[in-house]
Amino acid sequence: MRLSRMYLVALACLALALAPAVAGRTEGHPARVAVSIENYAFQPDPITVVVGATVVWTNRDEVNHTVVSNDKLFSSPELEANRTFEFTFKKAGTFPYFCSLHPEMKGKVIVK
Image (cartoon, rainbow, N blue to C red; front, top):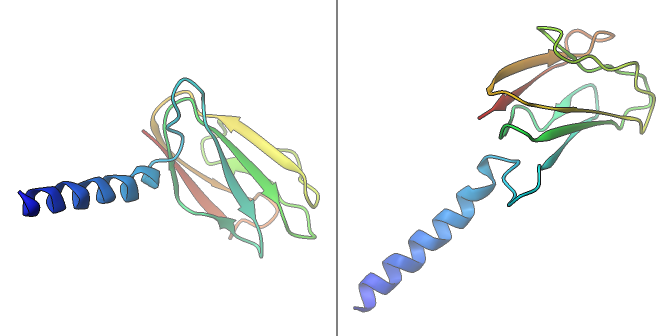
């Protein structure tokens, strides 16, 4: 009995640890997932969210940046320091994006 109880506790801990692996899972409320633009990089990258989640990018650099999807599904204006851009993902898929001012800056949103 003691071994099976320890096994159940271990499984519960594992389930809790894996829960944040897909961001955007909230009961009845669409999630907001933050991405920081910092040191000429998008962090975290890649991110995985569920359909209906809103991703909010915040520019933490002192220079302007943009957030533009490769397929032009979303495109931000130039974001000055501490400005944000958000987009709600309404369908599943993989959405690579980049900064049009610094094309070497790339990121990816995976929507499940």
